[in-house]
Image (cartoon, rainbow, N blue to C red; front, side, top):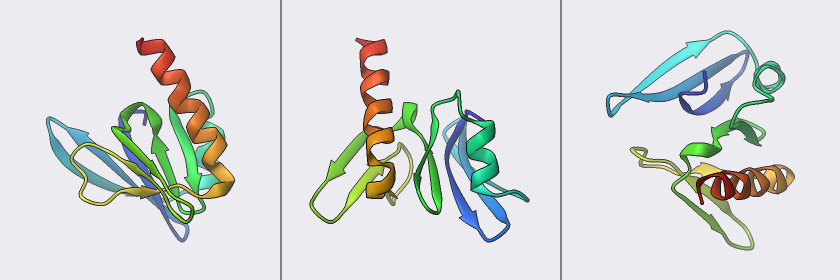
Length: 102
C-alpha cells in the first residue's frame, strides 16, 4: 500500500492510484479512508483532505495560498488538495522526509 501515490474516497470505496514502471495504475477497493488511515498510521501515507490521502514521500511540490493548498505528485496532471484540517500533519511529514534525506 505504501507504493500508493494517493487514495481518493468514493462512497464506501477507495480508489488507489499508484505508479509501476512509470505507468499510472488505479484500483478500487471496498473500504473507507477512515479505516485506511488507521491501518497506515506508521507509513508516509497521510490523510490530507476529507476525500484524499497522499504518500508524502512522493510529493515533489507543495503550494500554499490563502485559499488553496495543493500537493503535486510525479506523473499526475492534477494536484491533490490539502485541507486546513490536515495541513499541519502534511507539513510535519514533509519536514520529516526532508530531514531524513538531508
